[in-house]
Image 1: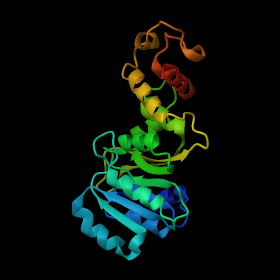
Image 2: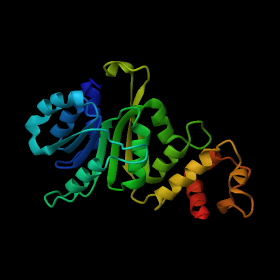
Image 3: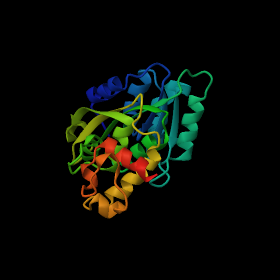
Image 4: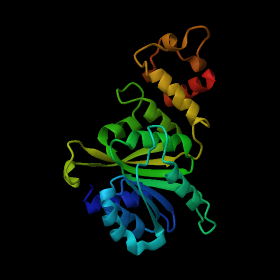
Amino acid sequence: FLHDGNQMRRIVEAAAIEPGELVLEVGAGTGALSEYLLDAGAQLVAVEMDRGLEPILQQRLASYGDRVTLLMGDVLTGKHQINPRVIEIIQSEIQDPKSRFISFKLIANLPYNVASPLIANLVCDYPQMSLAVVMIQREVAERLSASPGVKAYGPLGVLVQAMYHVEKIATLGPSCFWPPPKVESQVVRLRRRDAPLTDDPAKLSRTLQRLFQRRRKQLGSILGRARPLPGGIDPTWRPERLSVEQLIALSNWLG
């Protein structure tokens, strides 16, 4: 659990929450960050898998009344699907005639085991997510912002960069948590692009999986050499050499 109040305030400040704005928090823990989000004015949907923490969360968040919805359970049902109950709650909040918001923000100290699949699912399938400020393992943060040619560059980072601007906000050492982990964490902010680089992120995601499963192979070997590749892309190049824009062009070309 994150116990550093200064870092929690920093996360909330980076989120720039407006009063009544819908926020999804995954991994609510004992509710410490939840309180900061609610005090900032959020309409909060808090998800926590550990049912042993439910009494603590219920007691800690009771005074906020209907401004918080607590869901005990896993945010994912399998690697490739978000829990339908989570989406149902978010959609009902967005469509509430009393709300002036049509989007939501993800603000969370994400459990390491769900960070990558959750971010990929939300980025790919839920354009209503306008912004995310997440605390994640440093290695995952490096994948989100990686450039072509480096080891961390791959499907997750390309997909996210196609749809969002990626900013690193802070690096946190183990002492900020209890119990202290054996790895460093980073806070990353994702701001949805006014004009995403692709209008079909699902197709892009499939293309990326196809290419990067054989990332050490040449494109010609993966795709065949029957016709020229688009945009001057050389069939002798490996997938990790291509920019985000080139990978999108290749995805559109593949159809």
